[in-house]
Length: 140
Image (cartoon, rainbow, N blue to C red; front, top):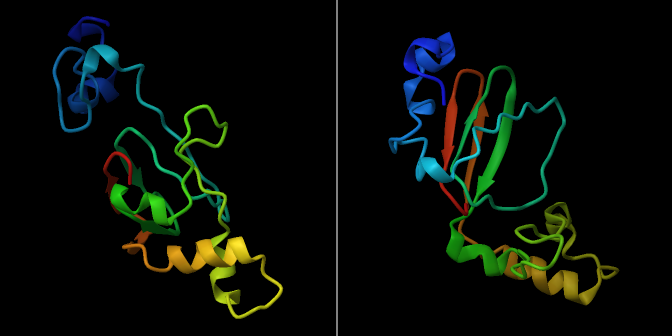
């Protein structure tokens, strides 16, 4: 880590992200951290149902995006893969867009069963708009 007098303006203006040895709201166990990940999404990008082990802050710069969140205790209803050896660990194979087709007799019975169960999961549904920030706790 650089001494304080060598920090960039971002680090000086946002010390909660840059304090190397102190826990903050955004940073816990600082000695184990590998840095902040920053991702930018484009229009139309969707993410498969999953959870992250770390906390997330989502800031909407432009436009809007819908988020559907469930608490960790609901993972078993969402088809989340819990086997760490599986390459899809922390992700769901379910296509929740199919929920509207549950009356379709052509749906595979196992998919139908999983989607019926997923309808009972507790969720928070929100649309994040430009200028807003959404905090997502670990494992949500």
